Image (cartoon, rainbow, N blue to C red; front, side):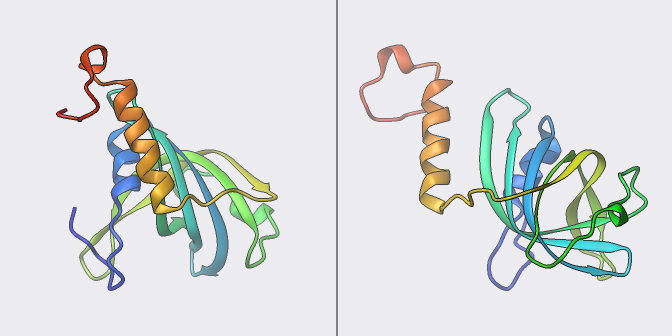
Length: 147
Protein backbone atom coordinates (compact mmCIF):
# COMPACT_ATOMS: atom_id res chain seq x y z
CA UNK A 1 0.00 0.00 0.00
CA UNK A 2 1.41 3.41 -0.88
CA UNK A 3 2.03 6.11 1.67
CA UNK A 4 -0.89 8.50 2.00
CA UNK A 5 0.48 11.13 4.35
CA UNK A 6 2.85 14.05 4.04
CA UNK A 7 4.74 12.86 7.12
CA UNK A 8 5.48 9.54 5.39
CA UNK A 9 3.21 7.34 7.48
CA UNK A 10 2.03 4.11 5.96
CA UNK A 11 -0.82 1.96 7.24
CA UNK A 12 1.30 -1.18 7.51
CA UNK A 13 -0.02 -2.48 10.83
CA UNK A 14 -3.69 -1.72 10.19
CA UNK A 15 -3.25 -3.38 6.80
CA UNK A 16 -1.64 -6.38 8.54
CA UNK A 17 -4.62 -6.59 10.91
CA UNK A 18 -7.00 -6.29 7.94
CA UNK A 19 -5.56 -9.36 6.18
CA UNK A 20 -4.78 -11.15 9.46
CA UNK A 21 -6.96 -12.35 12.31
CA UNK A 22 -8.13 -9.03 13.73
CA UNK A 23 -6.53 -6.68 16.21
CA UNK A 24 -6.67 -4.87 19.51
CA UNK A 25 -6.22 -1.14 19.08
CA UNK A 26 -5.05 1.29 21.74
CA UNK A 27 -5.51 4.98 21.07
CA UNK A 28 -5.96 8.43 22.51
CA UNK A 29 -9.20 10.25 21.68
CA UNK A 30 -8.62 13.50 19.81
CA UNK A 31 -11.97 14.77 18.53
CA UNK A 32 -15.40 14.00 17.10
CA UNK A 33 -16.16 15.39 13.67
CA UNK A 34 -19.51 14.66 12.05
CA UNK A 35 -20.15 10.94 12.48
CA UNK A 36 -16.46 10.12 12.95
CA UNK A 37 -14.25 9.79 16.00
CA UNK A 38 -10.54 10.49 15.60
CA UNK A 39 -7.99 8.62 17.71
CA UNK A 40 -4.27 9.39 17.64
CA UNK A 41 -1.10 7.62 18.82
CA UNK A 42 -2.39 4.21 17.81
CA UNK A 43 -0.86 0.95 19.04
CA UNK A 44 -1.96 -2.11 17.04
CA UNK A 45 -1.63 -5.63 18.46
CA UNK A 46 -2.74 -8.50 16.28
CA UNK A 47 -2.10 -11.87 14.74
CA UNK A 48 -1.09 -12.34 11.13
CA UNK A 49 -2.93 -14.88 9.00
CA UNK A 50 -0.01 -17.31 9.41
CA UNK A 51 -0.38 -17.13 13.20
CA UNK A 52 2.53 -14.82 13.99
CA UNK A 53 1.76 -12.01 16.47
CA UNK A 54 2.74 -8.43 15.71
CA UNK A 55 2.81 -5.08 17.49
CA UNK A 56 3.09 -1.75 15.74
CA UNK A 57 2.06 1.86 15.78
CA UNK A 58 0.04 4.09 13.51
CA UNK A 59 -0.45 7.84 13.35
CA UNK A 60 -4.26 7.97 13.64
CA UNK A 61 -7.50 6.05 13.21
CA UNK A 62 -11.00 7.24 12.35
CA UNK A 63 -13.98 5.25 13.64
CA UNK A 64 -17.36 5.99 12.09
CA UNK A 65 -20.80 5.45 13.60
CA UNK A 66 -23.19 3.06 11.95
CA UNK A 67 -20.71 0.22 11.40
CA UNK A 68 -22.43 -2.40 13.61
CA UNK A 69 -20.65 -1.02 16.62
CA UNK A 70 -21.18 -0.01 20.18
CA UNK A 71 -22.64 3.45 20.50
CA UNK A 72 -19.65 5.63 21.32
CA UNK A 73 -21.97 8.36 22.58
CA UNK A 74 -22.41 6.43 25.84
CA UNK A 75 -18.80 7.27 26.70
CA UNK A 76 -18.06 10.78 27.89
CA UNK A 77 -14.89 11.15 25.84
CA UNK A 78 -12.58 14.09 26.36
CA UNK A 79 -9.47 14.93 24.39
CA UNK A 80 -6.60 12.88 25.76
CA UNK A 81 -8.70 9.97 27.09
CA UNK A 82 -7.20 6.59 26.26
CA UNK A 83 -9.17 3.58 25.02
CA UNK A 84 -8.73 -0.10 24.15
CA UNK A 85 -10.78 -1.13 21.13
CA UNK A 86 -11.30 -4.67 19.85
CA UNK A 87 -12.86 -5.04 16.44
CA UNK A 88 -12.32 -5.90 12.83
CA UNK A 89 -10.40 -3.57 10.52
CA UNK A 90 -11.98 -2.71 7.18
CA UNK A 91 -11.05 -0.64 4.15
CA UNK A 92 -13.13 2.43 3.29
CA UNK A 93 -12.97 5.03 0.57
CA UNK A 94 -12.41 8.67 1.47
CA UNK A 95 -14.08 11.61 -0.21
CA UNK A 96 -10.91 12.31 -2.20
CA UNK A 97 -10.94 8.78 -3.67
CA UNK A 98 -8.06 7.33 -1.64
CA UNK A 99 -8.48 4.39 0.72
CA UNK A 100 -7.84 4.07 4.44
CA UNK A 101 -8.54 1.65 7.29
CA UNK A 102 -11.01 1.91 10.13
CA UNK A 103 -12.56 -0.47 12.68
CA UNK A 104 -16.06 -1.94 12.55
CA UNK A 105 -17.88 -4.77 14.33
CA UNK A 106 -16.45 -3.48 17.60
CA UNK A 107 -16.60 -6.20 20.25
CA UNK A 108 -15.31 -4.15 23.16
CA UNK A 109 -14.52 -0.52 23.76
CA UNK A 110 -13.16 0.42 27.15
CA UNK A 111 -11.53 3.43 28.72
CA UNK A 112 -8.08 2.66 30.14
CA UNK A 113 -5.58 4.56 32.27
CA UNK A 114 -2.58 4.23 30.01
CA UNK A 115 -0.84 2.12 27.40
CA UNK A 116 2.70 1.96 26.16
CA UNK A 117 3.45 3.37 22.76
CA UNK A 118 6.29 1.31 21.27
CA UNK A 119 9.32 3.01 19.81
CA UNK A 120 10.43 2.00 16.33
CA UNK A 121 13.35 0.13 17.89
CA UNK A 122 10.96 -1.91 20.07
CA UNK A 123 8.80 -2.71 17.04
CA UNK A 124 11.87 -3.87 15.10
CA UNK A 125 13.12 -6.00 18.01
CA UNK A 126 9.68 -7.59 18.45
CA UNK A 127 9.53 -8.43 14.75
CA UNK A 128 13.01 -10.00 14.85
CA UNK A 129 12.13 -12.00 17.97
CA UNK A 130 8.95 -13.39 16.41
CA UNK A 131 10.72 -14.05 13.13
CA UNK A 132 13.35 -16.17 14.92
CA UNK A 133 10.65 -17.93 16.93
CA UNK A 134 8.90 -19.15 13.77
CA UNK A 135 11.98 -19.57 11.58
CA UNK A 136 12.14 -23.02 9.95
CA UNK A 137 15.96 -22.87 10.10
CA UNK A 138 16.23 -22.06 13.83
CA UNK A 139 17.70 -25.52 14.62
CA UNK A 140 20.64 -24.81 12.30
CA UNK A 141 20.99 -21.09 13.04
CA UNK A 142 24.42 -19.55 12.62
CA UNK A 143 23.38 -16.07 13.71
CA UNK A 144 22.94 -14.70 10.19
CA UNK A 145 19.33 -14.63 9.07
CA UNK A 146 18.77 -15.93 5.55
CA UNK A 147 15.01 -16.37 5.84
